Structures are given as C-alpha cells and as structure tokens.
Image (tube, rainbow, N blue to C red):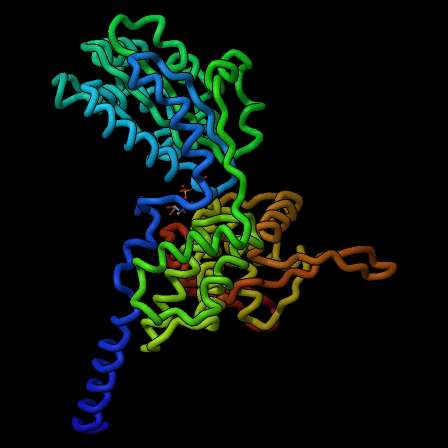
Length: 420
Ligand SMILES: Nc1ncnc2c1ncn2[C@@H]1O[C@H](COP(=O)(O)OP(=O)(O)OP(=O)(O)O)[C@@H](O)[C@H]1O
C-alpha cells in the first residue's frame, strides 16, 4: 500500500468517526449512575415512600422500610430520588436530615457498615474509625456518639441488604433497627433494599418485624412500561431522528422477556447506539439492537468465566484444548484425563473424577459448555461435552489469570491427547 492509499483510508476513517459522533447527544443519560428527573411507572411507589417518610418533616421518627422487587425494577433509583427530595425539602423546614447510602455488595460486614456510618460524619465530628481492627462494640458505641451529637434524622439505606446478611448474619440489622431506644437526640430509620425475594426467610423473625414495619414492592415492568422509560431517556440521550422506529420497542420487548429489567433495556439501547456509532452508521436500527443483545450476553459470559474458581478454570481449559484438537464432543473421562495432566503441569492437586463431573454440570448450568447426557445402548449413559463459547474467547479471558497463564502455551498432541 502506498502513502496515497494510507491518506485516503485515514480520510475515510475521520469522516466516518465524525459522522458517528452524531448519534449520541448525551450518552451519560443511559448510564446506571444517572438519576432521571422523572420515573415513569413508579409514581405509586414514590408516593408510598413519601407517605412513610413524611413524619420526618413533622419531627417524628418514620418507620423502617423494606423495599423489594426483582433486579432492574427501579428500587435504588426510586429510593435515592425520594430521599434526596426529602433532604432538600427538610432544609426548607430547618430539619437536619442525613441520608447515608450503603451498597452492601461492597460493604458486606457488620463492622464495615458501622464504620461507614461513623465516617460519614467525619467532617462534622472529626471522628474516623479504621476499616478494620477495632472491636465491633467500640465502633457501635462511636456510631451512637456521633449520630447523637445533635437532633437530627438519619436515614440509612442498605442496598443489596441480602448480600450483607448472607455474608455476615443479621446482627447489624438487629442493632440498627433498635438503635432509637439508645439515642437521646437523633432518630434513625433504616431502608433495606433487596432483589432476593427469599431473603426474608434468612432473617430472625424479630429483625424481620422491625425492618419491615413498612414494605414497598416493586413489580417488574412490562414491555409498554419499558418503552415509556426508554422513550424518556432517549430524548435526552440521542439526537433527534437517530433511532429507527423499531429500536425502542425491540429493546423493551427483549428486556421484558427476561424479567422486566429496566437496566437491561437501557443497556441494550446504549450498546446498540455504540455499535451504530462504531460502524459509522447514521441511524440506530433493529440490527444494532440484535448485535447489542449478543454483545451483552458475551460480556456477561466473559465475566462469569473470569470469576470461576481455579479448578473450574483448569477444567474449562482442558475442554478448550480438546476443542482446538478437534476432539469435541468429548466425554467426562476424556476431559478428566486432560484436566489431570494440566493439574500436574501447574502443581495443582487434582479433584476426583466424580467431583469434576459435578463441576462439568456447573459449567453447563452457567451456559459456558453444553453437557448432554446421551445413551450408548448397552454401554450405558455418557455425557457429550461441547463448548458454548468459542475457545478463542475463553483463552482471551483466561490469559489474565496468573495461575492459568503457564498453561496457555501448551497444546495437545493430536492423537494421544498428550500435552506438548
Ligand atoms: N421508572 C424508571 N424510569 C426511568 N429509569 C428507570 C426507572 N426504573 C429503573 N430505571 C433505570 O433502570 C436502571 C436500574 O434501576 P435500579 O438500579 O433502580 O434497579 P434496582 O431495582 O435497584 O435493581 P437491582 O436490584 O439489580 O439493584 C437504572 O439505570 C435506573 O435509572
């Protein structure tokens, strides 16, 4: 290729990229962190939450609230929306309100929840506790001290509360939902949010009854509701006329088919826009939505592979090697033989074939492989194992795992299936 050709290609690329920028007016509007000014189809929940919290404006303690519903039904965004508004209005009435939002997926121990609450007030109180190391009782005593320094309302939002309880039990909820009896000036109320509908079963009945003095349920959105949510966001996110007519209905229908998840619907719309932008298209079409669906599924699969335990990764890599050697479908015995050799190679204690058979079922359930049980007549039943994700993709994910890296350069000697 001569220089002239280079020049022309680059010109084309710039032209294409320039055109592509016209798709999004403001992509941030489609991100998870964005709080819209209106929340269509959540007016009932907003009103219920406002009714439960309004005592604050009269100087009375509101009930604790348990908010639940499936993922992407707008629980977090609605609670944030209502509590922020309450905080804003309370300023008008000179009532100090603090809203402390804690994501229990990250802050997942009794100690860390308490420490986070103490440290929320550190600018005001000058008191800060370390994230580890103190006796929990002492952190709790500090918490009461800092909260009770003046008359105020403290609303503690514990999002993904089920993660906290599963990891560390419900002790922290027991303390926080009863703390008002130990305070003189301040008043605390807890809003727990969960998408695990079975979560209540794990709670001590006393904790459950004090946490769910009030319950607010968030039902899944249907396709029409998702359409409204997307239409409202799209107006701010995209330039006019950029979305083909069928794009929003398709995103809404695909997300409704799963479980009425607004996050999924928004992700589809954003990724479809990004794909159109990258292709240099001047419009987002249904074709881009289908591609977005595929990309999101692939990304999720990559995330699942990334977080597999080491033994499952080695097992999966054994299946990848068999695939690259043209040996799929394979049975459990074939896979186990390669797996054992890989273990030896990296000094990993191999699991029994029985245990590996369980892990194969797990990989199958996660959708990474397909392990179909087939009958071999009088030879009994066996599994036929195939990959559902390309070997190339799996290698790409595994190469970031240091424990697996030494394996990535080896392959199977075709016939004997021995490592070389
Ligand atoms: N009624 C709505 N109007 C506009 N956007 C919404 C609405 N409901 C949800 N969303 C958007 O959908 C996404 C997911 O919402 P949110 O995080 O509140 O869900 P969630 O129920 O808390 O989910 P999870 O249980 O998975 O945490 C967010 O980007 C949010 O802004």
